[in-house]
Picture (tube, rainbow, N blue to C red):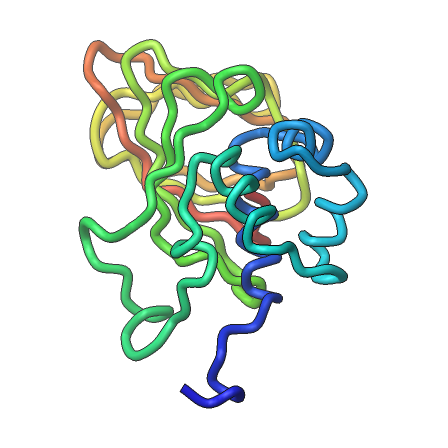
Length: 193
């Protein structure tokens, strides 16, 4: 591999931020867990500093990931094709993002993508952590189960095969309203998570 082909740290910076945010950690919480300063973690995430290997090791341990994932590069079909069984599954922090919910990435995370797409897997009794709102638009398709979707104080009951679309600026939340696990194919733009 030539120096021109070597992975840049900018991709690692983005992945470090993504890993921290998907776990619902603040900069301060990650810094404390990894034994470094909050300002230094911010510099790592913004590509203004490069952590030493021991520091990077402490960061990935605190995040519950591995160093290999941090440097994974997209070649060939990767970045275009995301094979079944190879998509990351992100468990959400129950205190900040919802109880009993995990996200299966459909579109690989990259800073240039205009869309974000995940399959939301919701356990029986699982629900998002209260209504949220942000810029953008969302569309979804219920793959299995029964979902209660609340958009702008209106409640909708959705079953397998039902779909929805709404402005992300409206407060929205959801929960598994059935007695079996549920899954929703969910797309939003711009990427927010």
